[in-house]
Image (cartoon, rainbow, N blue to C red; front, side, top):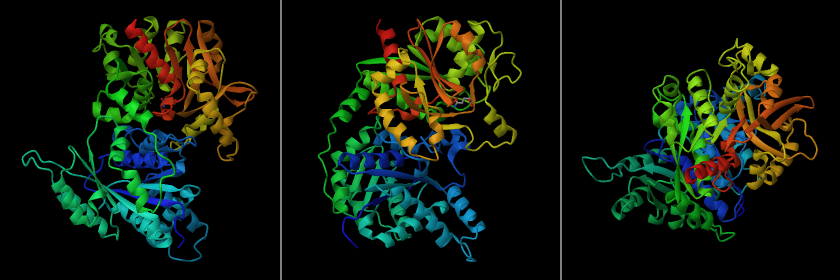
Length: 581
Ligand code: GLN
């Protein structure tokens, strides 16, 4: 085997319990290797039978992340994109459902020539094939295996990576175990036993971790470090302490304090390609931790029965986009999660809304709390308070404007009231068939679509100011080369500014009402051309308002700490200005 053959694979597994930040740790390792000058990609393996995360309940599973190519994926992919500041494909997520689907499809086509199709080798080979396909052209491939060691569902994946190791040599595959060290209250001492058991479980698959990242409330002391070192039979330098932190982006900085990047490179007999420059991240994290100003933003959704915890998980990208935009404005963003139902039934009164510097109505589905959201939008519009509407937020901003300004009584979205006299938000033809045939999985308008922006509008200025028109040009060129996704370009008009934002929705603005709405002062500042003659409205803004902006897209999916979303940036800036005025 030749030395330093690429790609190198780093397999990340979790021991003890889930939800201890495996995704963030994986994303941080990716970021570090990128900062050392390597080409990195990451894969999230979800061992569930669902084909993708599109039909999973967000309150149970967290937000559904959308990729440029329309994948509906586990939120870990969002962490990868935010940390690595690069776009991933739906292929970067492997689920058991996809793997079996493909193998069964191949079997039906007679591809296995009479063989008995089995878990091993057919399923594990398909897993390997997918991993290799994604890794093609990269130098490092991080593979995060979801769940916890000991789960039955993990077994084929552990087998597959072990088999990959046999195939390409152990010098090309290394393992990281992320574990958790609890400190039971009545004992008051950090315990290593669950970690020892995780190491043992992993060893049953022939896997011995090269690094162990120890998540815990506090940093690991030397006694615990020694115990793990002896038990796992690894160098104590490879036992890394990862205590709880307040700001996610501290994680890579902390790992670097432990020289994790250099240690990983050494493990692969590699050298750094460049000296990493952490100054921007250091500076940004310091702003997030000690902001000069603080604004209070209300996020209005239908949360009442869920509780705040899962709620934050369902809108993680919106909260992240606010954090990014806050850092760029040297400003902290405190988010209050307001129940739209409480606004609707009067439990939250108008005067309570006064304390907010801005309002966000994020994406959502169904009727619940819709009238409450509309009330908040009306309040923001009439009182000149910054408002940002995302997807459903745009749809309801149009409903509110149609009802209260254009005097189209009981105007609505057909999602909420199918019989409304003024269907300002409606189905387009292609979605009608989907619903009729109950094809709910993967059939929304999904992925990054091109939008034309009208020059001179606030939205155009924000995209320009944030460098996104330049940045998106690169991805639009990529889209032109991509046969499967080229339809997302639509019909392109020459010499108009173009941008790309991601979508996940079924309903659209009804163009029939656009002239009436525009006449009353709402501006449609961007649109997608399905064809030369059919437009989909993508952006609105209100002339004369401090900041009243909404989009049919989900710009939060493209916001990173390195490149905050223009619409969030403008929103935070306007809210801060209102506060300081
Ligand atoms: N329910 C709306 C639609 O399907 C909005 C979806 C969303 O906000 N993501 O169009």
